[in-house]
Image (cartoon, rainbow, N blue to C red; front, top):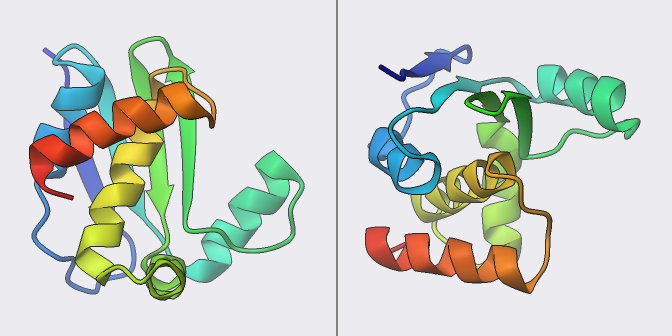
Length: 126
């Protein structure tokens, strides 16, 4: 049976978001996913190592196998981006998570990815 784990490294309380159901809607029941909530400094380090970009980002998705992956989210960066897009923080956090899951499904930015994301966002009213 697949697992979903959430590791909150920042010790701050997260909004109440049904990450598990969103994960299942995108990736199915047989996908093992870890969601790791990290500080900005750790996100910057990961982004530098894996994307050669020396800035923090709001989300990174790492497929480990066809049925296992990790998503890292920086709440501080997500709050900044939420303001840019005029979205409430909790809504944007859910939006980001869906976006990361769709990347793990194998899609890159474009109209197909946007269609899939919209379908999932509609389901969860995001």
